Image (cartoon, rainbow, N blue to C red; front, side, top):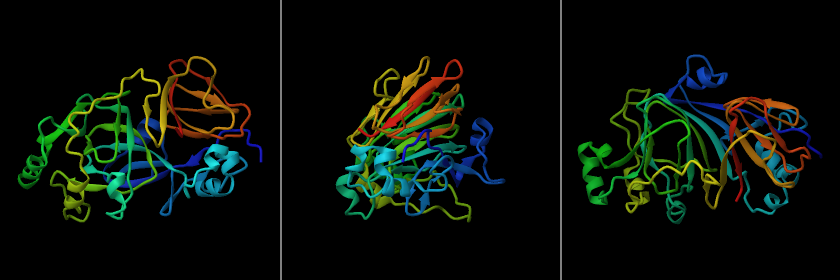
Length: 315
């Protein structure tokens, strides 16, 4: 099977108490009416959620079907050799109309014991209000004892490291790093294929049922890296922008034709600004596409000035 165009997928929209409508206002997403959408799952291969191909020869197939039955053609021989039973990454857009809970994902060394999955991720801010901020890691001097004391008296915010956020900021969130997204941020999140999250504090907020949302304090305290003071944003000119054992992400200003991946390798491309063309298709900000491994014409072309994008590959 020879593929001749990028693969696009139908987004899955997730209602969240902290979500809003900015994905429609800013990026033209076709959100369900009257729903506070916090997450748009753009590429996902989970038992409970599946991306479905929108276009081309593979239209209607799930991402899991591509990974299971067409892995070499779509993802390449190197990916075909992986033992992973599912596509190993998950791509989202997040709209934080309100701030998210303070949370942590279990590190690999503990996840299996806790019957969860480790999750390392990165955030790339694509829109932010003037006073928006992110919470990542702990303030210098925070200890487990001081953190537990803050939990008891409701002052957890004072133990967290805060960073003002602006469009273009990127931060790496390894498993074990306590974090929260502040209100007024729209973010691209690229992560391991996992959905294990432990909430340690939720700003005393009530859920849609009028009750406090479930917390996982014991699991969180086991998972938090208390030797993680004040992490900083990735250097904006770094190449790659983020590299870890699970994914490698580049940010590129597209001012000339560019090969997003070598022949025989796949890449996932996220449009940030401007517009780009590839394989006869045109893409605008907020759109994602998968560049298949066996596609011959792999050239990305800028279609507007100031076009920029994220390119994600397996390491």
